[in-house]
Image (cartoon, rainbow, N blue to C red; front, side, top):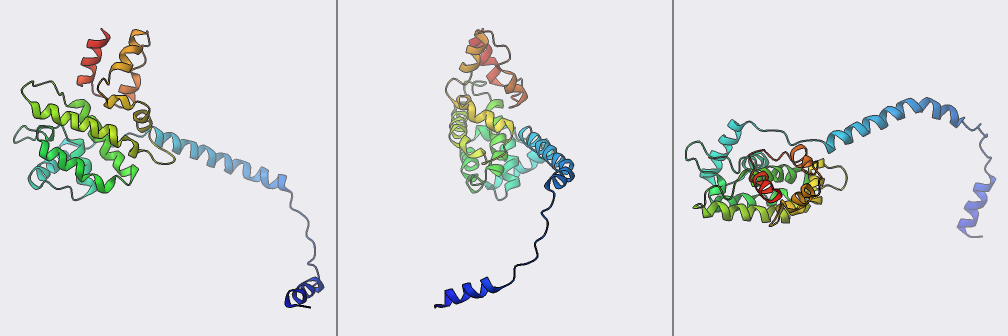
Length: 231
């Protein structure tokens, strides 16, 4: 007899423990029903808030302060600085009246400087949101003589189209991030085409998410060009 057989015989010779009655699962289920329902409702509320969450607004004075520092240093040393600069991409500096969208060197420093946060969708999403609103608020055709702004606007558009896939996490994401993924044409050559076709077909609600979800400002070039195409 080997060691395994000896151990088996020893275990078989041990007395069985006294049997205990099985618990009444229905009583446990009844007792837990209320707390489980509350947890389920709390989880649903948390998911709803995450999906509908907007990026917190930043006071313009704070943005101006960070923009001024970045303009001089050409550095994004912290995540806070990155978020503020992205939020103020098309905001003119008080002193010079120029924005980052008027300076290609500084725009490229911003876009390249976001690399450390691109591995984190939650953080990069904050930066992306600011860049996206800079894209919609900066009018590339406002000044026909300003070729730099037009070129920078195209650089930003291409960056947003390429980087959009990096703003989603595996599970919960805000509605605006999902909308961007489904409508990547917003960063294409004819960002208004999908909506112009919908309006022509009588769908007057097709642009509602652009205002309610993406928060595209009413002064954006987008509305002007959409109106010109849709008639």
